[in-house]
Length: 120
Image (tube, rainbow, N blue to C red; front, side, top):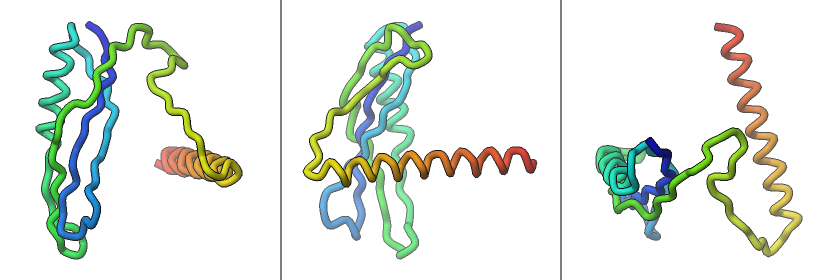
């Protein structure tokens, strides 16, 4: 069995949506071959389509579009890079502030979860 990294694409459709919205999700799929990984990913995306009423109440639909990408992960081990992005921000200082803010937020969430687990 092999591990594959797949990208599922959903379109978010709703009355309140003024500009088209798409959600891209990276998922791990385990399969013998790439064709089976693609099929499993498509089934997963299809099963996760949903429609619901939000708080407004407006109907929101998450419509599965397709699998946009499939990559075989050859060396699944601690610390291996599975994806990456290079950015060129207009304002590097603001970007670095955002990185620091996200790090602090993630650390705060971990500490909060740890506290909740120890209280249980």
